[in-house]
Length: 278
Ligand SMILES: C[S@@+](CC[C@H](N)C(=O)[O-])C[C@H]1O[C@@H](n2cnc3c(N)ncnc32)[C@H](O)[C@@H]1O
Image 1 (spheres, helix red, strand yellow):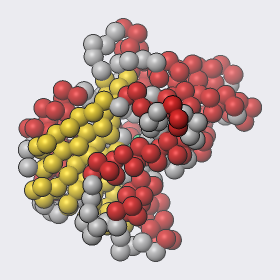
Image 2 (cartoon, helix red, strand yellow; image 1 turned 60 degrees about the vertical axis):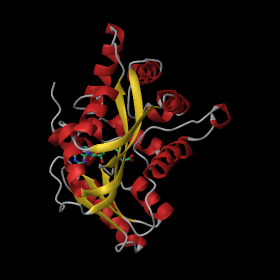
Image 3 (cartoon, rainbow, N blue to C red; image 1 turned 90 degrees about the horizontal axis):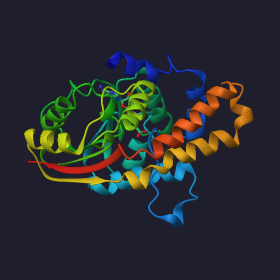
């Protein structure tokens, strides 16, 4: 099954979510991405703290300077975008393929009185509505996996960034060689979460170079983030009675079993990437 940008848009608009996932949004909190656990001392961090920690890794990697203009490619509900704006005193533009997310982001900006610092727009990352060289930095925090053509997104990023600008990416990827068992897990992730395809470290290295990015650093942080599936399964099990309103016993068992299995599957990888627009 091929996933289109329309499928991704309806997934994030909330129009095609089956009830268990709708409920998971509430459980997960504001950041629509994996958590990051640096070492055993932070193993008890709640998911909101662990997901903020991944955002903070991106903020550090991007190293934006006060007053700069930063693009968030695939901004979700804008939580990481606003965390970045506050942490680095920058102005941010977040784009998303979901109309609902863009509208909610704009409503939040108005409510917080941040209209001069933050803007959320409905736009496709493969065809960005911005002039050449109009941003000082950009990031894509767990959004590239949805994009049908990652090379085109990187070409667009290179176009809208000024020379010397930083780019940071966090993404779920495939780590080969993929065993038959690993393929089952990756296929399930792809279809459930409307993922067009999973990239690889090699693909990123090639495509970043092909689009003129230099100083490329690719770090495999799978071991730091794969606790996410276990934490999610634990959380659902803890609130099992509540979730039974939204799903059957069997669906819950399948969900939590799959989360634990995915967390233990080595082919299910995660990369943190930084680069500079040459
Ligand atoms: C997993 S969410 C991550 C959201 C956010 N970065 C975060 O970490 O909370 C993926 C986001 O990518 C966006 N996205 C997917 N495909 C896109 C595209 N072609 N153009 C722009 N945004 C896209 C989705 O709308 C969604 O907001």
